[in-house]
Length: 338
Ligand code: NAD
Ligand code: UDP
Ligand code: UDP
Image 1: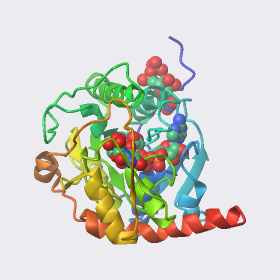
Image 2: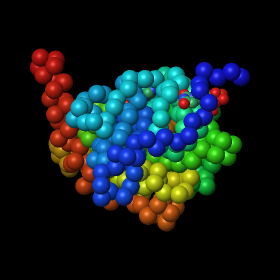
Image 3: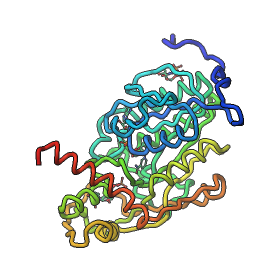
């Protein structure tokens, strides 16, 4: 089929001349799709601070300019408002592909996982860039194996309410492996488990953000179902370290990136109470359909091959997001004239 795109070009090296004297590694040009979001913006901070050039592509569906505003004016940083569902031409060395409507209230809405991933793989193929996909523990569905190893194929409902996300990411993994095998693209696949930290969306329905915001607003913590379902919560800086180790390493993956510390939602509510407001109350609500009963990563593979493991426990990490949440909630209230 005729293509709107020019033929493959050789890998760009024109910026190698700008490497400051005394620094051995060539400065890389890196795309981060979804870089205005929660995880993406922390990743961009790390890449910029080690001296690389970063181009963020984001359509601001759930991301915010505020997450990146401190980088405006930095000569190593560019921000492009663009929907990855549409093709784009860039010359880059690495692509971190995070763009995705990533929370229950948002992820039903568009075909980003399939079309966006295809376009970024097409881009990686054309310019010879290395491509990292941020997949998810949701590819394991409601797992019948516990904890989950990367070899587990999952237990996913293909027609349920969550399937747009789970199956979208499973398809994205398939596309990445096809481009790897068929076109020789250097791919890296991360399966990310529940992650929290500053800049998380305030109201996107994810449990840590919900509980922390509720405790600050003096509202009851909403526990869905009986609260005995489990998740394993990872602090965002641990994840970012893992993503970079994966990108820089020699292994395709998939790799589980998560913190193996497992908590029920009732235990999480207790930690939030201890951290923010011991008088907070709990309110039970009906659970959503197809909610996985338990989830905990087996991270032996990442430990062994990437030399990576999380360093920050839930009790140490939660306090690190409270100021950011307090400030944003305060600003919102001021905006409403309260
Ligand atoms: P987020 O919603 O904060 O960030 C996603 C970003 O992608 C946002 O900035 C959004 O505006 C952008 N985006 C969405 N659709 C787009 C499109 N079509 N074109 C361009 N930009 C688009 O979510 P996050 O928590 O930072 O998640 C980042 C990635 O990590 C996602 O791929 C998500 O699936 C994955 N992940 C996150 C977690 C977690 O717990 N945070 C767990 C598993 C996987
Ligand atoms: N693509 C893109 N930027 C590029 C190269 C490709 O957005 O630099 C898109 C392209 O428009 C297509 C997708 O990536 O929709 C897959 O590209 P590929 O070349 O693999 O497939 P083809 O165009 O041959 O179907
Ligand atoms: N959950 C909850 N209260 C909330 C939001 C979520 O009890 O206010 C529960 C939800 O039912 C699920 C768990 O917390 O069992 C994790 O939900 P989240 O959407 O954060 O992540 P995911 O289900 O994608 O792992």
